[in-house]
Amino acid sequence: MHAAAPGDQTVSPGGGALEGMLDRVSRGDQAAFETVYATVAAPVLGLVRRLVRDPAQSEEVAQEVLIEVWRCAARFDPEKGSAMAWIMTMAHRAVDRIRSAQASTDREQRVAARTHMPAFDEVSEQVERRLEREQVRRCLAALTEIQRESVVLAYYRGYTYQETADLLGAALGTVKTRLRDGLIRLRDCLGVAS
Image (cartoon, rainbow, N blue to C red; front, side, top):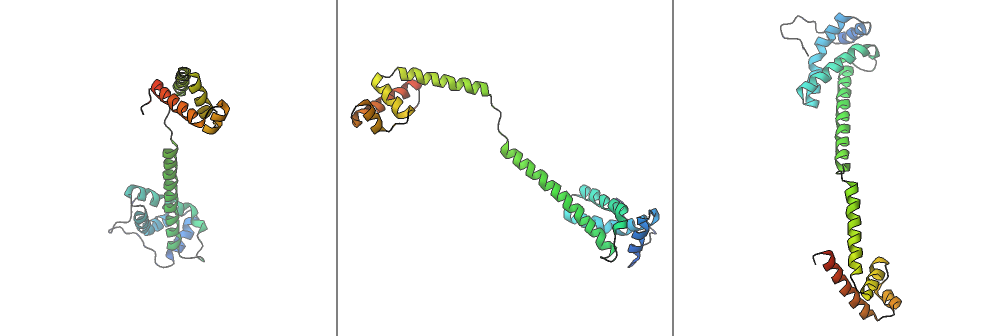
């Protein structure tokens, strides 16, 4: 982006002249646009640079604003405010669009990071579960009949200790002892650390 250097002989329009220049720009007058550009480029860049902070991105945004001034000059309405205020409003809106796009990208990245689930091998997981079930079945088969009945009723069918005792026709203390002994044997068979 090139702003007028101190030695340049550019005409700086005074109060009201910028509005007249925008009127000429709206009719395609390139010389008028060069004057508008020379007048507003530095203030636009300064505003954008204060808001965006990144010098390269600031220059891009300022260029976009000035291109928009060229394209939209016919929309300027002097009844609603000064030309400089209109141009600076365009600069603020451009910065807002940049910030909004960045915020959206940041949100998407945060959501993606939160929802990212590590890949796993479903087949190997199914095989592992099947092997664990087979090992539990083998260990259950190694229990005495009384222990196996107590464990199956209490832990696989969801009966309470009292209901298990009632179903087996045994005293509650006896069932608790069978369960404790059966669970100890299961733990040892499965190789589970206590």
